[in-house]
Image (cartoon, rainbow, N blue to C red; front, side, top):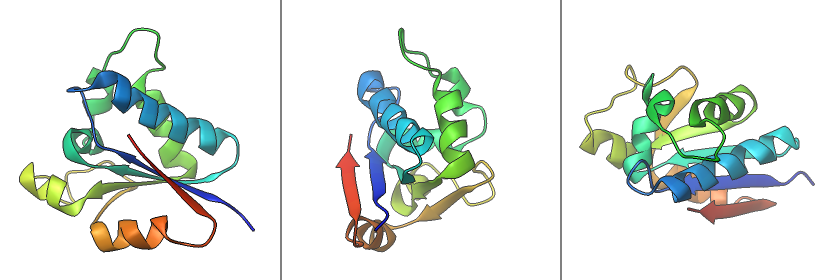
Length: 120
């Protein structure tokens, strides 16, 4: 049975180390061939927008834009419906490949057979 890793990023530039850790773990798992679903919630929702990941800097961390590119190439990226709405982000605003979905979809992914969920 294939395993799926569901990673929920709850922090953005407000907690850069926690944010970078979520993206690093998700990208590393993608590179290892794992089926990955990255959820952007809270302040990390901003990274669903074009150019926002390029603005993120953290010493000794891989560039967030590169990590996001890896995840978008072979995994899934979802922005939380409510988090996006609070920031006035709509489906036409996000990067190609990013979807907007809510808690029911997150719960479905996290509880699927063979899934492992991590929250940062």
